[in-house]
Amino acid sequence: MFSSDNGRVLVFSGRANQELTEEICGYMGVPSGKTVIRDFSDKEIYVRIEENVRGGDVFVVQSTCFPGNTNLMELLIMIDALRRASAKRITAVIPYYGYARQDRKNEPRVPITSKLVADLVVTAGADRVLTVDLHAGQIQGFFNVPVDHLFAINVLIEYIKAQNLKNMIVISPDAGGVERARAYAKRLDTSLAIIDKRRDIPNEAKAMNIIGDVKGKIAFIVDDMIDTAGTLMEATDALLGAGAKEVHACCSHPVLSGPAEERIANSPIKSVVTTNTIPLNDELKKNPKIKVLSVASLLGEAILRIHQETSVSSLFDSTKD
Image (cartoon, rainbow, N blue to C red; front, side, top):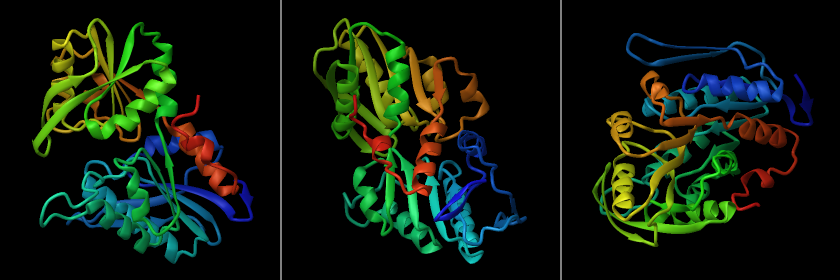
């Protein structure tokens, strides 16, 4: 255990992604904090911190992935427990920030859930937030505490380059993802195409037109998350229909809910590259098309730099060469 002017550094894990937390602690060379977390018979969550955190610089690792409501509540309870135990500073490390897709009021009488969750995290007692690939960059402004926003591109791009795919083109699955796709295209020194998509109801999308020439090329779709994989399948079919030689995809967050596993397994897509911000279930782990890369070193290095009050900027530069 090491310390600085901020006190001892302590890393605790919720139940959402304990394997990732252990990897982070391994990178940092510190033990994972001891806790007791269990459910009452009515599914209320019980938390007890099993070691002294008074005056410590505490980091709580918890993705708010499925089951999202449970994991979010568990994060809030852990933060509250640490605040009441007199931790000097509490950083909520949220590799996957759930409820982020509703980030604006785009129709009457709907909530802005990403702002609501930000308020809950801060109210619970978080002094800082560390996260990876928010669904929309403006979500950082929903917090009234500092936010360090990392990008998984720095992990994914190395793998993509190592595949040495010839005549590749980067694909944005919709207009909203163009900035992300442009960053990949710049780093890979390749061209960019965009899929014009129409979405009528949540989790259902219809790919319409492809802006750009994909004929004879290896298409690599980049997105922040894949949920039911409906958009991915539409995009794959559209690209192959437009003459693409083959289709691959990568994303930061493998939500992969509902029919996603079956759709990917039965589709003509060659591979889906993702990270461990969300743990995969056993069926998804068996799928040979899915490749998972670890963001443990990225998060571990960020935690060390935050604790030591050194610059984190190089870690969230998504356009560096």
